[in-house]
Image (cartoon, rainbow, N blue to C red; front, side, top):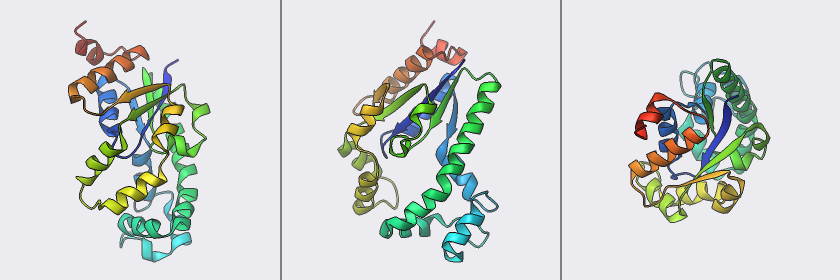
Length: 211
C-alpha cells in the first residue's frame, strides 16, 4: 500500500517548491489550499454557509468569497477567522481524504497531502503514515514573504504568530527538509531521495539519481 505523507511548513518555508518537486518525482499531491479555492469559488460547496454567516459584503459580484475583504476582516477579528475556519476545515478535510483515496485506488506510488495547518489542526496525524516538515529560520520566512506584493511587515508578523511555532512543527515531523541557504538543486535532490525511500520509484526519480 502506498504511503500517505503529510507535507507542511510555515509561510515562506518553501513548502510549495517541495510539493512541486514531489510531483516531479512521481507523487500525487493533494493540496488543501487548492481545495479551499474550489470550495469558495462561485458555486462552491462552502458558499451558501459562508454567505449565511457573513452576508453579501464578503462576496464578489459573481458569488465567490472575496478573499481580500476576508483577509482584512480576519486580520482585525479573530472570531471571524474562527467562524470561517469552522465552516471550511471540515469540507477541506473531507475533500482531501476523497482525493487521496481516489489516487490510491488509481495506483499512485505515493500520496502527499499538502496541509499548511497540519500541526495546528491537531487531527491529521492519525490519518497519515509520515509527516514531512519544510523548515527554515523565522528570519528567512520573514525575508521571503516580504518580497511578495501586498505583504507589509505587520501582516507577516500576524500570520507567523497565528501559525504553529517552528519547534512545534519539528516536534511533529518524521522527516525534515531544511530549506535555508541551500541551492535549489540540492533541495530537489533531497526531495527525490525521500520520495524514493517512501516507494516512489518513478522514471523521473530514477533518472534524477543517474541509476
